[in-house]
Length: 115
Image 1 (cartoon, rainbow, N blue to C red):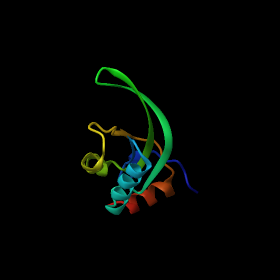
Image 2: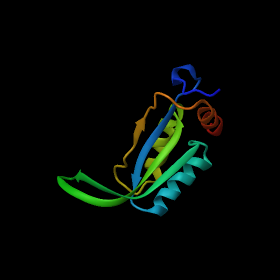
Image 3: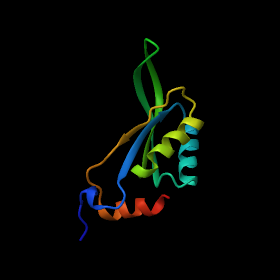
């Protein structure tokens, strides 16, 4: 029987990194790089979200692609650094979310998929 066990019982903690970018091409480039280097187990792309944000004192409105990057906490810093080197933005959105529970089989697959 599979349960949604708390992650504190697992050898590695999972996390989700949020990142937005300006085009499908950029999103695919980032996702491919992370997967090729086994930094992420899965990257989901949410196409054409509308972002409104403050930038250099002005409210800016842009269409963006949201990347949901599924990985382990031990890879988070490497992911941040990798994205910064290839991302088109001066200041890319890089936010780590730490889920409190992840289904056991999915968590094991995620851990086995990354280095």
